[in-house]
Length: 194
Image (cartoon, rainbow, N blue to C red; front, side, top):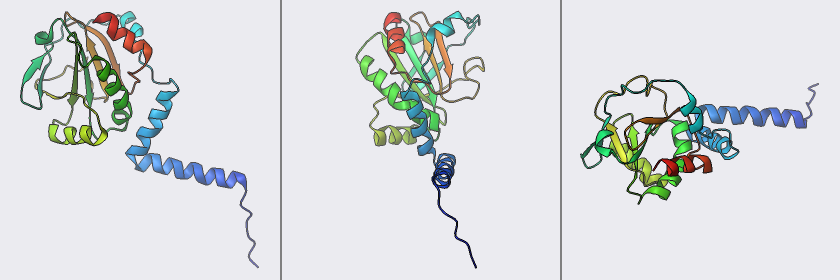
């Protein structure tokens, strides 16, 4: 005689937990939604003040150079008198996808500000694919590729990585990993430096 197991609440919760874990493991979109949820409760807020207190010497940084979708070249030095927000990302990266709405929100606040420049660097160098991603998701962020090597001190391969340079071209913020750039604190940081 076969005994039937009763389905208990704990069994249902266990099955749902396993299903959620499998979904997060095998679906990058699910991972990005999970990360966005964590960002919404304030877990991934960037800390510009914390970077300023670090005692790292970034004075010997080579001039970073970029090419946009039209083939025009820019560099940190040619963008003097502007605060430059640089984000290294990829279309296949769940944390990059998760933080993209917050960067787009920040960009929309400053898009017409002549003292602030946004540079979204596709690490794969495939601007056509990056543009299709932006269009599909309704983002209006300016796309670039890197035309020279990025020092490991700035980007060690972790994406997303975000750098902010002041009007003199000095690095004033660096963050590797996901962050909520639409936060009031980060907006104030950009505003005070512009």
